[in-house]
Image (tube, rainbow, N blue to C red; front, side):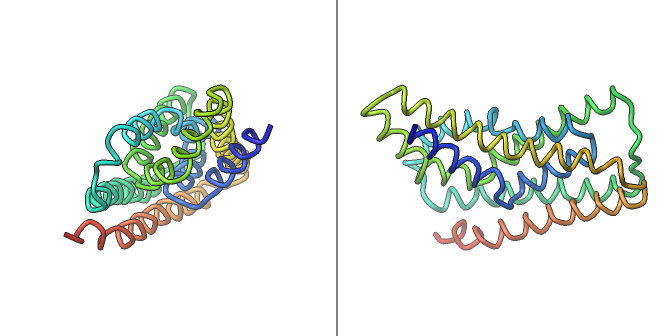
Amino acid sequence: MDVVLVGLALGAAAGISPGPLLVLVVTSALRGGWLAGVMAACAPLLSDVVVVAGTLVVLSQLSEQAIGWLALVGAVFVAWTGWSTIRDSRHAVLETGAAAQRAEAWQALWRAAVVNVLSPHPWVFWATVLGPLALTTWRSSSAQAITLVAAFYVAIVGAKVVIAIVVARGRHLLSDRVYRWALAVAGALLVVAAVVLAVEFWPVAFSG
């Protein structure tokens, strides 16, 4: 039971922590409704396969400078996503067909997965917190280690899904004008997140 609580606590904290992925979940829910928001919220289930494998196999051999460059590439992608959102907000309308919403949902999953892979935070979290904790737990009980990781992902995805659904329900209360402003603000927040990420890891990337 303890590992379940630990996994849920870590996942819930990560799920509601401000960052590019959370803003992208909100943006996706605004643009494409609950399905797009939920798909974006599920991105860690896809992207973290790469993160976990990379952490276990590669990250321990990488320098801090390499992680810094990963963060800068991620910042560029987040900034591009934010700029695209601001650009699209000028002509966005709330009423979209089912086919358009499904297309937006798949695009949301792709964007969120790329953002998560290129963000250094999941890598650092797995390398410093969840990875060592899961490995230590595995040595005493493989079942408990699997439960710990499963609880973490249930919580992190669940928290973001709840946020996505709340945002999607509220979007129908907006007029097209307010909707465009909300999209523009969300896009601007993504650009701000990109700048913060770049400022944080720029010295690391050029530390050599």
